[in-house]
Amino acid sequence: MAGVELSHTPLTKTVKFVFGLGDWGTSAAATARNVFWFVFLTNVVGLSAGLAGGVWLVGRLWDAVNDPLIGSISDRLHSRWGRRRPFLLFGSIPFALTFFLLFVVPPFESEVALVLSLIHISEPTRPY
Image (cartoon, rainbow, N blue to C red; front, side, top):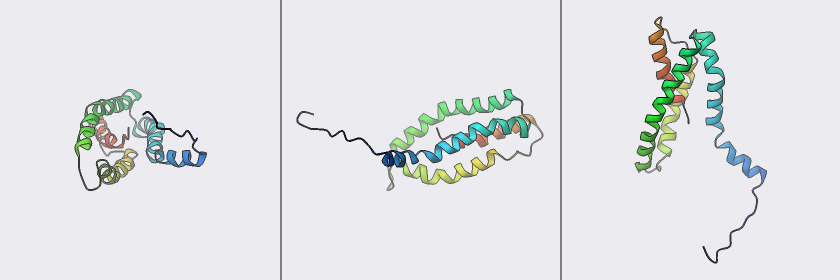
């Protein structure tokens, strides 16, 4: 870029703070989930620590497959609202519902059914 002079004015703390607010919702949900969910699974639901970690592991493995597919779909989406906004708008309601359901004990006696339902409920709440 010959002949183009770039300005290097530093950003104010207010501007940095406002930009940081854009990630607050996702980060707050992820932090709450990470801090409280394992304690909930072991102390309230009654799962062993190994099973609680297994629920998390299966979800992360699913993310490794699913996230690139959804990214590819969102890259190719052409709507009047843009490529990403429909996912944000229409994904917020299922995200809120499943985040609430994370902390509800599923009414299953079988440990296998309990673990499968927790895997199913926990997947949509992974914002990253």
